[in-house]
Image (cartoon, rainbow, N blue to C red; front, side, top):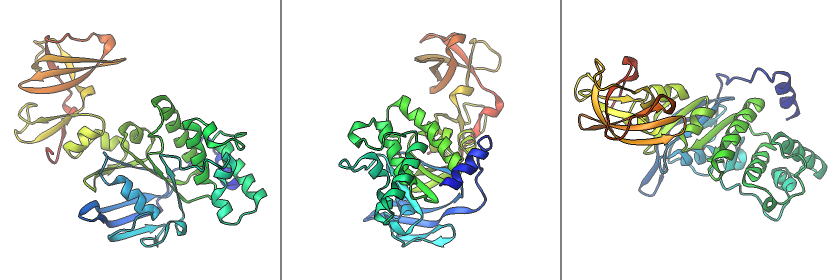
Length: 349
């Protein structure tokens, strides 16, 4: 860890970029629990040094996929490789990965230092060395001086940092994170998002991160795999997934989107299009080229206000700057959007 930290300090202004070497590879991987197929033919590659997120709603297969990588579940079909080595049947302790869980999983009877050093204790590392490395990790996660405390004496954010330090102390090549911020309040979650991303860049190790929070995945990741029904339905950079959704599911789940028939937007009827609310403009009712609508709902969201407008029997959402003036419920408006705002979809599901 010292060599890694020194290298990061020397190049603090130039964070390490993901390499082209594949750290984690899944090929046609499936996993079933009885009649339920939790993961169904998933193939993906995670590059070394990449922050890669598995994003999806509950039951979509993302957590099972993470557990397959970690060795907590075994595939019923397919192959899992870690740095080119077949790890499909290896137990968790034989894989060069560690996992950070949402519930922290700390030992309440141990102090923070011993919790962090636990993996080193199991490996037979001497007390002086394991305590030195534990303190190094606590300093890394900004908990220097907390080693003698018990988990019950820490806040939720501090306990999550301890869990992170414990996972990092054995210097894994891949860190798996299973919704690690889910139990934190919004403000703390946002702070931890920034800290996690900064830590990953500093260490340069591979992070595979499970979340159902679209904002979390978009703001932290190099690439995102969107899960639905046990499958990867789209994979790419956060910008590509958000700006160019392939399906109606992705358009609605990653952020929010209006999914509209071509007949409403001047395109071929029956073909579906995604239109992000922030690209919709509300104009005067008689604006040339505008579609006419009536405001049915107004939801104040601080700097932006969401307006729900009924257009030809369809509800269209628009995000408008609050400071620019917001139409009232019942008011007639013209609805327009830039030509490049419409994104064609593969299906309407």
